[in-house]
Length: 238
Ligand code: SF4
Image (cartoon, rainbow, N blue to C red; front, side):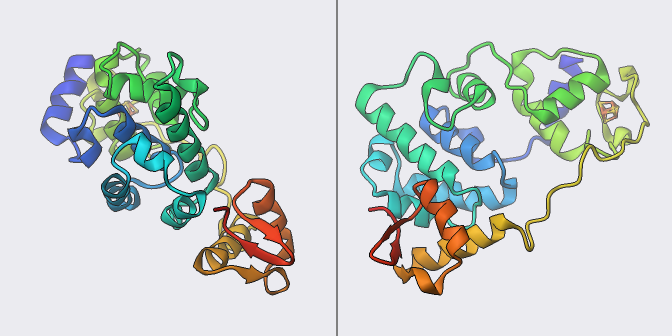
């Protein structure tokens, strides 16, 4: 199956900018951005980020406030701060032997950097790859990492897979099946996450009086070190 998948990938691969680099830092930035954000939204932000902070040392030297501002719109702002702390650790001590020692880097992100940047024989397994392996009953080799990303994003979709377009269809025991959604995506509209995000956006524009803001949202942001509150004024951490 690996050969069929790689042939298909050779013909249809999405042209994503981080596929043109082997720089571990650039790959790390892409993987952290992609953790909860769609590819189309990540592409321009990744390009701008790398232009502004091309190395871990450049990012390490930035203020948390600049990082939080630059992360606005990508969602889950703690990821930006973790990436900043990871860059500080890399700039000070070099890359750790175990990449999960870096803040915000779990087993999947570590495997992605090891495979896509360092060419190591390890397959990054996220929910998409897990799904394809389960459905097809096949364990793919590490050369299939990027191809599996594309197959999971465009063909072997979670609920209604597009088996008619799938290069693995002939040997796949799950061909033609439909699936119920595992769980409903939690709504952003009206959620506490939205309130946090709205409060942070206001503070990112300029320091604000706590009284003008959603106090509960500010308390949660302060707990995550995304804002600080001093004498009733809420600002980004400098
Ligand atoms: S044939 Fe269908 S279920 Fe099987 S891997 Fe391809 S898209 Fe997924």
